[in-house]
Image 1 (cartoon, rainbow, N blue to C red):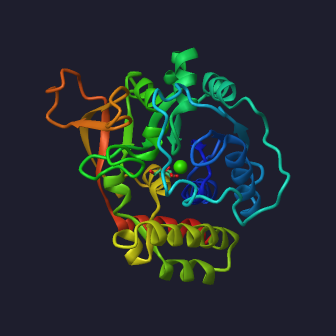
Image 2: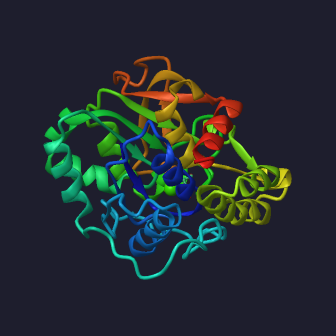
Image 3: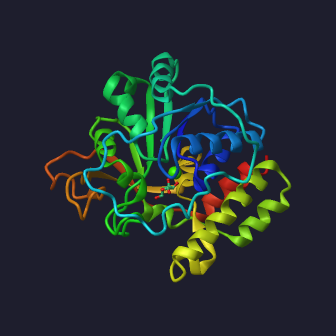
Length: 314
Ligand code: BDR
Ligand code: CA
């Protein structure tokens, strides 16, 4: 597995799961601008790996700017900057990534691969769009691409129409969704809002007295507080938060955690109101295109928590 992250508080949980689960061979991580700057995300990724004793996992810093700059001066989002800590309260300062050539490393690693690799994308799709643009042949080595992004029946979380990862670089998402990926799995807000982590869960993680348990409880506490501050009448009222990115890793470990349906996903890259919106055609072809993705319509929360607990015990 290769994990593309903009760490980020929920990315930190995804990263911990991927690094700790014995069935996962985490080949490396690429970082990208998204929740935070590319450099902050890189530092946070290194901190998490250090804190859980997995510093041997390679981190390659990817792109610091979008694949395609937004044509719209994006209105400041009052919640921006609240969900993710610039510096996560784990690990140590001053670590350096293996390289600052994340896209090149991704291309070279896939070209050299002797067995298929799953790409888990839990950030704007900037790095992957760049890699597929310069080296479309790398798809030959890809087992599956799993994307956290988009929304179907739920409203967006960055704008009423758009989910954050897609909104941040919709043209990159469009490039990826149209790349002809044989096995593309999209995990939208509709599914991730079904796996909530609560303060009670955090207490349980702390009691495990493992590094992974401490890291996940530390980063998730802030995340729950942020949901409470920004959405006090919704998820915040439950004193819980959705672990969007972690659900993608849980699915790679145990596919039954998601209920999938074949759809065509399109991304809006023009309209000012709907910029970054994902359009889901589940009627097979009414949009004139053939299905390009398997879309998560539900998540099994109990199973998710079992997988997460299992990773944190180690
Ligand atoms: C996605 O946006 C980011 O803030 C999270 O890390 C997650 O990848 C959820 O919309
Ligand atoms: Ca993320």
